[in-house]
Length: 77
Image (cartoon, rainbow, N blue to C red; front, side, top):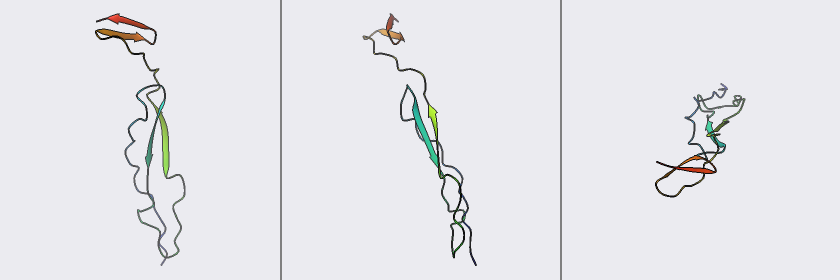
């Protein structure tokens, strides 16, 4: 008898691809719950999702002992 494919649960979101300034995370699922067999239908729909992460702007680098408050300004700690 045909066995139609079914989606697994989504995996955990991946680590963000960037620490700042708009990174991306992905997660996926697999057509294995159950796997399609004997002429059954494959799963429909996307197997991967993406979302934006860490959208805050990157701050510049300050000399040692200074804290970066904005991209253009450093202040003493």
